[in-house]
Image (cartoon, rainbow, N blue to C red; front, side, top):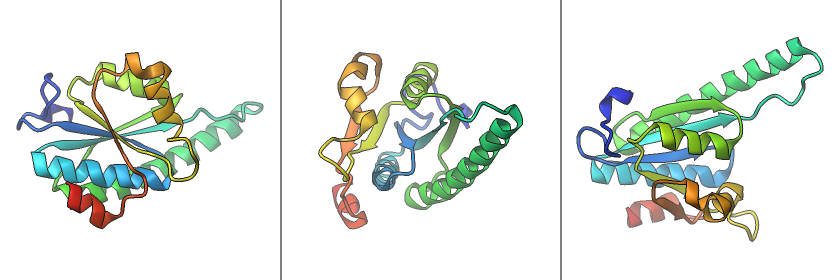
Length: 166
């Protein structure tokens, strides 16, 4: 799918590439829907980044490998479901990036490696007074390492509200 993009932060058709970091939070779906709607309205694409944390159980290598494989299979199923939603909302399947490591580090690496990505879309947490660990990192220590604009949407937006603002 990378062949559909050039190196100026846009898809070949001139649209922007909206990156969403996939996790298990409720607000991630809000960011995904927002990014897909923006991509549809602007002729852009959605890219998804899923970062699998390294397996913590290292005492027995075979057990660690099994845990990693199970997590990978679960992640692939999640990405397939989310890709179908993106296709429904935007008309195009997303570009999918799956990595293993620390989310912040892998996000920064991806942005360095993929100049086609033009906007990072995140949703603020609805759980606590803090916006979420990734947003806190980006607006704090990581702000100098992110080369693209960041759109932060309220994690409490409904589908109807997303449609209204996009």
